[in-house]
Image (cartoon, rainbow, N blue to C red; front, side, top):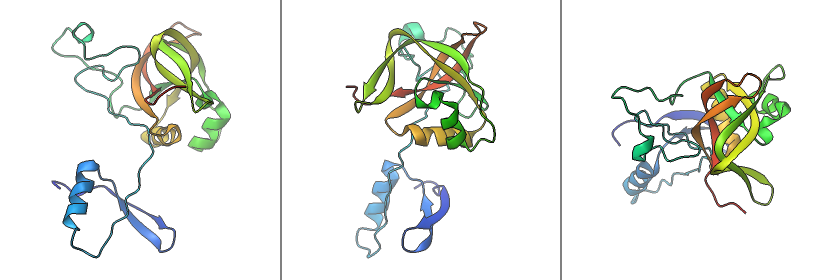
Length: 195
């Protein structure tokens, strides 16, 4: 590896305190290869978290269209694609259980009930997966839901864990229904197979 992986402290089931490192697939293979003749056997745990990989060179990934196609590319040489990967606070569009303020209070550890604004996104449809979960997917429709301003990376991480790796974070244009204001924000787009 070219760098030391990020390390976090935690607790193990049997041994008590434990240290964990975040590694990707390439690093995992390198670790397994380096320990091939060793008696030490590392434990790998899959992190079930929605992917967030916003491009700084294009609008990708974006709800409703492929931002890498020529007719969707930026026309100027200098362009800021917002929201940026680590920009906070950031507006999020919610359409399922996260649109319930009580769920946000529980998941984010909020002291007060959050304010959500009625909102819509275009270029999407709602489907289901697992016979019960709502799935926002690219499409030609207008989806009604709620907008919420996520205050920090920590709050965003909690939401990404809640949505799991069945979803990815994508950019979207959110229209606030109360003012018709249009803002660039983020939402969770389903990446699996719908029912």
